[in-house]
Amino acid sequence: MSILVFAENTDGNFKKSTLEAVAYAAEVAKNTSTTCVAVSIGNVDDTKAEELSKYGADKIVNVKNDKLATFIAEPFAKILANISSQENASIIVVSNTYSGKSIAPKVAAKLKAGIVSGVISYPDTTNGFKVRRTVFSGKAFADVDITTPIKVLAITPNTFTTLENNKTVNLVSTDSGLNDADFNTTSIEVTRVTGKIVLTEAEVVISGGRGLKGPENWHLVEHLAEALNAATACSKPVSDMDWRSHSEHVGQTGITIKPNLYFAIGISGAIQHLAGVSSSKVIVVINKDPEAPFFKAADYGIVGDAFEVMPKIIEAAKKLKAQHA
Ligand SMILES: Cc1cc2nc3c(=O)[nH]c(=O)nc-3n(C[C@H](O)[C@H](O)[C@H](O)COP(=O)(O)OP(=O)(O)OC[C@H]3O[C@@H](n4cnc5c(N)ncnc54)[C@H](O)[C@@H]3O)c2cc1C
Image 1 (cartoon, rainbow, N blue to C red):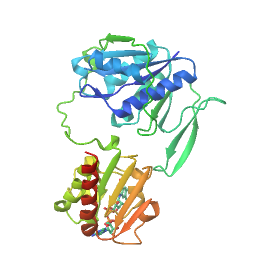
Image 2: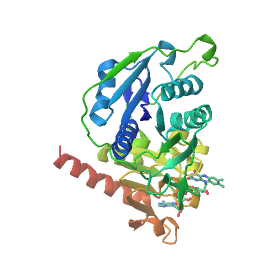
Image 3: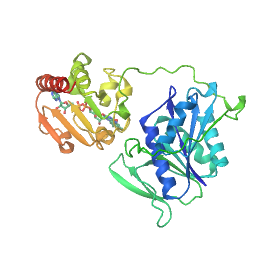
Image 4: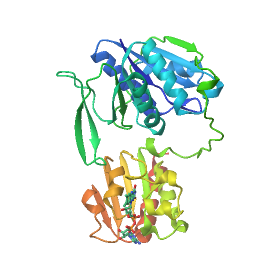
């Protein structure tokens, strides 16, 4: 028996959400007296893959193949399912990222496993196998019992800590074991935004809404983000109007984030927006309308015109940064 975890990489590096997933799987393995097997797929260096042992992986399977350098759901799912069977895995853990979301159901179907996505708890095995997940866009919880022998858990990023849990390195480097017929789709080009803090992993997020009037005013968001080492985000209408890229759109139909600090500037706080940000630890709202619904969800609220308030906050943040430089 083992607990298997998918160690997702971007350009050969592991994301924070991957380290969280490995630490989570290691904790479940410890609690169920079994071992944690991390599976990396792509072109990750063995020395980089070995780092997963620092987060609790007892064994690392590094699947290397040029055809897997970019993520393609079907072959990745097949490899994970194959290795799960070889390792006699009873639980397969993935992070509920875009890639994780697309392979988790495929792996579950191949292994005839029960699946829960959006997991926010460790399994409770006192009576069956229960995990907690968020439902209704984060407004409620559901405790789900999985009864199949094999279980797939897609855990919510930014929910579990990346516990350092040093283990002896045990790395197996292998080919995919797939043939050409398994690669029936090809990723032609992947264009990544570089040099920016990844929104889903940011500790601090500065977000702007329609109240900022137009893309020419986004320097207010960007300057504060720069001073606070933060990622930038926006409401849906802002990306729909092409003021900002859709990769910054947070909410029910966008990205779900859980930063330590979320700044909402000129955003009304519609329920669909809150669905993606309400789990932030501290929320600061700047809005000129004292009746804006966002204030109900805010830890700190500033009633004022963003064009007057923001320059003062940016100045203060820059001073703070200089003091700590
Ligand atoms: C099915 C569905 C899914 C959706 N999914 C999402 C989603 O994922 N994410 C999302 O964001 N929305 C989503 N929406 C849209 C959502 O309902 C809201 O329409 C949207 O969030 C509003 O964006 P906003 O707050 O930027 O704009 P507005 O509602 O126009 O609010 C602008 C705010 O700025 C304030 N303001 C104006 N001028 C200033 C100023 N000078 N200084 C300070 N404040 C000022 C105003 O008081 C107002 O509160 C969805 C809607 C539907 C129906």
